[in-house]
Amino acid sequence: MNNLNTSQPDPDWDYYEAWQLLHDIRNKIDAALNVMSSEERADYTSDEKLKQILEPALEQLENVIDNHLNI
Image (cartoon, rainbow, N blue to C red; front, top):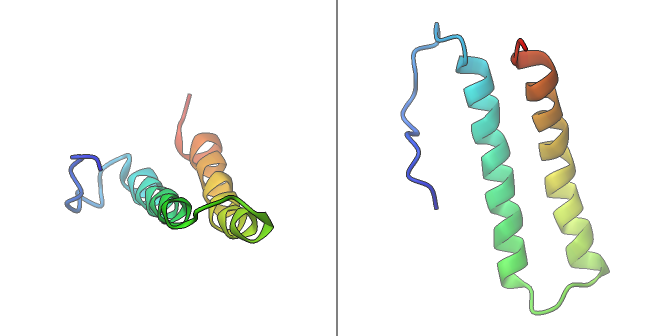
């Protein structure tokens, strides 16, 4: 996928917590992509699996945007 640096950053780094959360979100997105790639056709069951994976990722992303970026 990406060639982003996935080594552990310094825990004192300002973006450390957001970085950790975004990696967790990316793992969920990768899991959803794996589900999609293993399905021949979209159906209710596969859509529900994807929603179960992606809805928490969306909530986490909103949390990062709302609570970890001091704009």
